[in-house]
Image 1: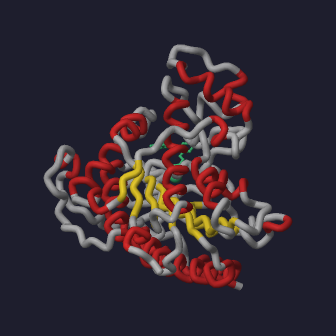
Image 2: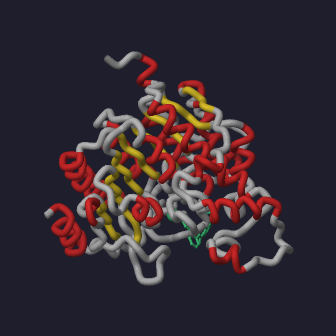
Length: 366
Ligand SMILES: O=C(/C=C/c1ccccc1NC(=O)c1ccccc1Oc1ccccc1)NO
Ligand SMILES: [Zn+2]
């Protein structure tokens, strides 16, 4: 019997948390834009707001090596003039993953945000939990990578596994969710499904269709490698087919989905030609199974489009229709010149020929 609070939607947020997320170089005020747009559409009051606390060292070491965590923690008062030691480079710190004074509190707070969201599901307080400021899917056990310092996704899945037997992880970011795939490659208890751009020289370079898991985990990893220009229709058709097949075969008890928005049209990554409707349709497919669901953010470097997208996804979760005009609020002027909630695709060519998509279908759906 589902009481009203079980339908509760948990939303991980605090002023302090958003402020800290804005300290990440290259992400500037993205978190603030996301939260304030969700607030401007009066969606926050419809959710159970959960204040995150930073993950403890012990919690982070449930996945990461203590050597790595100690090194990351030692960088906490690093400033740009300090030279990067070989030890830092050994752990992926300093170049691809820039160091900044609050790097450790940033990483532990974001990780704490995802663990807080996962706890809302394991405590049965909520049936859906959101941490739009998590989703850092590249970090490895002892290596920061692709601007990901701690892998909050892996730690969130590990927490869910204490209560739910089988977890389905879905990664919709433009980039392959390599850190999460690696962590669960050899287990049949976590199915990882990633849709991403797969092209020579494109980061992280993994995620080919031939990676299917190992040992007990064989056939519990599925990659859908895609090419530039994919459209909403082709993406959501492919997602629906693959996702329903995986649900039927794996029958998970909970779902974690990373909704990285760097595949959207007008993202600086300039790769896919998706609008928010794609991620929205994927989310609706996922919610139709009424399983405990953890929704995470990730990439997304056109900040206003990312805010529009995650605000739209929040409205789908809350089953609230939104006005297509961006409401007046503190950051209203950032949404010009159209002030429209929904994005329009560009007329870029779609390099995913039908023969290629047919080949993907045959190889993955058998
Ligand atoms: O989005 C990603 C990874 C991005 C990435 C990985 C390796 C090297 C560079 C990367 N990022 C970019 O090129 C990039 C381009 C435009 C704006 C922000 C960008 O990155 C980030 C990503 C996160 C935080 C800061 C910067 N994974 O989902
Ligand atoms: Zn990405």
